[in-house]
Length: 150
Image 1 (cartoon, rainbow, N blue to C red):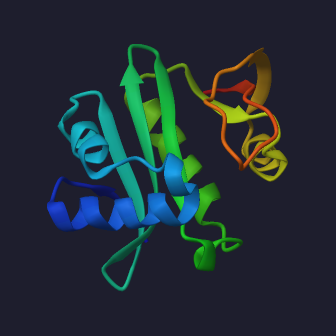
Image 2 (cartoon, rainbow, N blue to C red):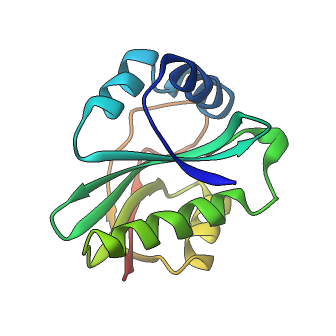
C-alpha cells in the first residue's frame, strides 16, 4: 500500500536502509533525509508492506512543476510494480497541487530505469553533460532530463 510518509526517525532509518541497498556510497544520508522531511516543498510517498517501507519516492513541488528527487525500491521487492505505482502517485499528487508537469533526471546509462520512466509517460527532453559525480555504477556522468506533461 502506498501512503504519504510523515517524519519520524524510524521512517528516516527505513529510507536510509533503502538508499544504501539501492545506491551504496551515493545514498542519501540520514541528515539528507531529515532535511527533505523538514523542507516545506518536499513530500515523501512510500510502499509499505507489514509496516515496513520497501520503496519510496521524494518529490518537490515548485510552482507548476513536480521535481522527482529520488525513487528507490529494495532489490527484493523490484519487478512488482512498486516504482510504477509510486510514479502514478506522484503524478496524481502533482495534479492536485496544480502542477503542469513532472520532471526528473536519470543517468543516460541506466537503461532499465529510462524504460520504466518512458512506460510511465515520461519523455526525454534534453541531456545534461556531467550532471552526476563519477561513480563505478555507470560509465557516464551524463543525465537525461525527462518530463511528463500532466
